[in-house]
Image (tube, rainbow, N blue to C red):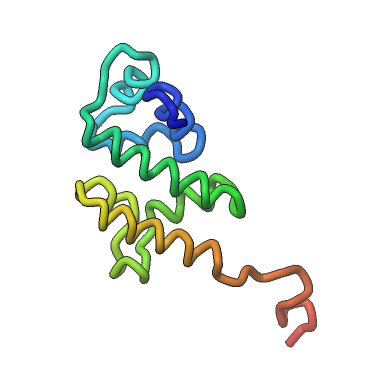
Length: 126
């Protein structure tokens, strides 16, 4: 069962923030995002698809990372994506292939070994 558009928008804003949702949705102001979430305005089907892709990826990333890390991941240059920020790729492309590439980059990030307390040389003074 997929979320209706307002639930999708509001959930994505909780995960990424309204500014990043506006960026991915190709609007200049967060007011449009708030209007989407309040059913006062409707995004195009292409935007809804991009936002659904972003939501799926953000949810996966938040299973193992804090929201701030997820937001930074969407905005940062990504070596798996030829140094292109994932948010830009999602915003600028309508293809399922691009969304799949971003999803694979997110999986790579989730699977990357995370440092654990006591595993670094700082604690040992080395």
